[in-house]
Amino acid sequence: MATLEGKARFRIDTDNTGAGIAIMVLTTATFAASDSTVKLIGAAVPLIALLSVRYLFQMIVLGVWEARRGSFSLFRTDNAKLQIVRALLLLTNSACTFAALRYLPLPVTTSLAMLAPLISTLLAALVLKDHVPRSKWAMVVIGFIGMLMVVRPGGSGFTWTVIFPIASATSFACFQVVSSHLSRVDDAATTNFLTALVATIVLCVAVWADQAQLLPEIARVTAASWMLVAFMATMATVGQLLMLQALRRAPLSVLTPFSYAQLAFASCFSWLLFGQAPDLWMAIGMCVIAASGIGTVLMHGRKAVAV
Image (cartoon, rainbow, N blue to C red; front, side):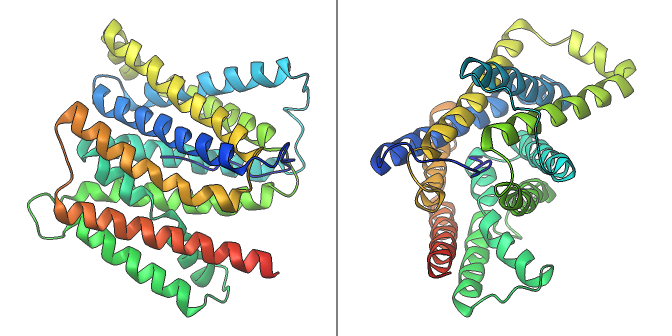
């Protein structure tokens, strides 16, 4: 799923909102391509290996990218604890998304993961005790109705595996809250690099702890599967770099609604690669979720402007 990872300290170089939106839409296409590749890989590659390659590749590319720009502050942070928490939340989000893609159609996984803004509203009210206006609660209810249209409890396609994309959305909602705090103190490129670094370290420890079982499984992975893994990691990292470029051209509040373009790309790739086109009720549910999420974002944006 598209992740708006860190809105921090971006100076918008030019007043080029149109270019920022175009790059944002392209970003969603790369994330949808990455998710589609994960689904193509299926269970051919152990989940930990998939995650390890994804974050190791991102860490290396972002490190080189910033070094070429003459930036040597990638390890400087004003809140190391929050950086670690952020990395663990995003790692949880990725793990749940990858697991969901093994069991559920791509559009279902993507649409349920897009519930994150609505879950953020719930967390703000229930955990942070923030005042949530009725308009936002209405968006939460609408989003919940959209979710029911997508998963249809009691139907033949409904299984316990829907817990994975819902957990993905929940962890991403928490991730957004932490990112919002970090955006006030750290640069976005630094934050993304540290996220990849911490995730890579955690995954390396996990591989080492389970090496007796994991290494033989990795040895059985074919060259074709490793090529798909490399493509997946490339698309995910390109998406992160594109996101940084989009944020330099347009405000986050303008870009966020366009992240729902990922639903359209996911549906397209699902049809082309797997022959799984959303049925009528699923398509309506996806549109309802997108509308409720966009409404939540726009209302939040208006509140920020008013403040």
